[in-house]
Length: 553
Image (cartoon, rainbow, N blue to C red; front, side, top):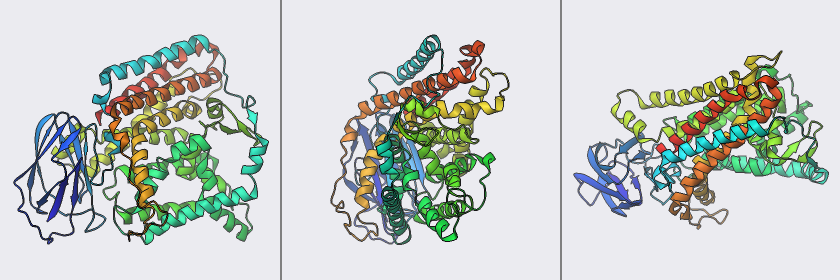
């Protein structure tokens, strides 16, 4: 039997099909969702695994339920009454025969069995103080007005030189000291060793902190960390630490390795690595299986160590997906480097303009933009309903959707930049990478803040609590085991909805400013206004499309 708990959302628990039950299986389970309240609250109902049962949902808004079961299921419900015929083939999670997968109900608020709120259900379209369509139109209008103002008042490049920055020799002496480097390397190695412990010796349960460490603290937490502190992954990279030791033993320069890294590869390997990670997180049918995560991390670690040994730290700077991601985000921080290596305090947009236009950079940006868009799209009721009613394999459809969104983002970026004016002697094929680093990082940050802020706040707390018990034995290594998750953010749905709009619009306006400044350098005088129209069209597409997907999920 599998036990169905109805709380602020739904959760399924069960150990085996033979588990005894004290109550008969119901013919129908009725759930009501009104004004963000779910009822019944806390009732426990037994349903037999492998046998069909009926769920009747009466809601004041459309939404969905994502069932982390084996196999995973997604149920869409409409405003009014929706009847769902369901069967749970196996109780428990695919990670264990006795654990707690969640049925998270996404409308404007949702929570799992232990009260953890769904990241993408907070701050929906109906929580805006104005209709969502007005918000999208206003965002596009703000972008267009910004373009017009820039075209009239900004006629010369202002961010191309790093000379207008303040050197920080004392701070540089501290961060580049041997003690600081060793301390950061040790912290990185200890964190990696702890993650390895949870992957190898930890139990295959939802309470294993490995999932939160990778999907929440690393993937999402790296955004604010890089914006505030600079390229944090580079500083704490365990692979740079291992490479330093191995290079010393083999008497090889850790920066260059045994062979020269092919410059033509640029960031293409990092783009492939980022795609592999977002596929694992968003599409893989076993994304929440400990064995799958363990395999992915193992392949990734071996590739990074061998690559660094062969090609040095230059390989990590170009191929490590997390280092490339963190370093690109750090270009929007106030910590920069001049060409001579001096650490400086600098304007974020000036810092961004110093990003090298490496081959493969547009592909990196396409993966980041496309995967975030797909993450919103996959939770939208129309897509969930399509998956339910289609006989084609859901994993295949999700794979095609992810690839489609990444290719679409890459096409918009490529066409928008290649259609601009062209200076004499310039190659049109080079334009995407010469523009990509100026217009897309602010957009990526805006999307990440809008899409994952509540996710980081709530599930970040959960992960910190779980980290005290890496082996799932009831330990309290760090004293956080008794902490409780603060869910106050769940009651700020309107503020979160407004924040999403502000984050996306701010990212696009900053992208417009940065790309306009770059256009003043790349475009001939006669094309400096008219030649940017394609860039504006691309940004309008990203703005309207991004907000529509955010509020459709």
